[in-house]
Image (tube, rainbow, N blue to C red; front, side):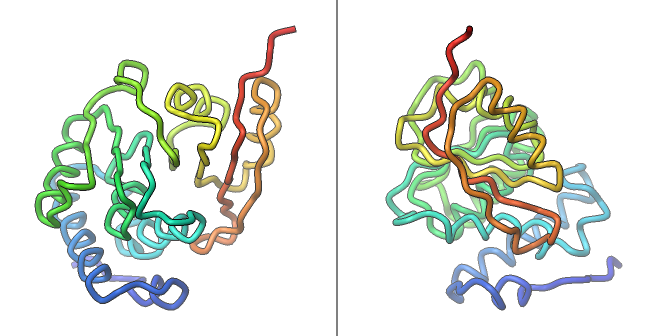
Length: 212
């Protein structure tokens, strides 16, 4: 049996969530642990600390969005649903989970079924480059690619008002400098609630620089 190193309190101690939301998140964590025995959904070493490493890490983005129930959210490279599926459970109005690996999409669809999220969540089993374009209010990603590449993939789905929320590690300053070579944007760095080394990049006004 896996020895748990964190539980729901790591979330509820810092973010106010309803009893119904906490119950749904708990069911999600239980499904993650069950499916992990058959599929490699997350790093095995992170599983005992799933509430901090995955749920809190994702849920912290919710507090950065004004009127989330009215937003269209696109999560690039959703994997096991972090952060996008957590955002849907927290109450975002419409969430698009984009994941190219079919096995992971089956897990996402199973969670959507179990939590009756069909009215708010769409799972896209395809590559970003081949998707039908739509405009998202929020674009997110975690552990997918460097910031410059994320801007490149997500830009066709962004409007001038789109906010980008990217969960990043200790190399964030280098990624920002690299991205600024090709992209113009404003940003704010938020300290991570789940990892003292982590940062959340909140960016807006993302536009490709003209080639010189």
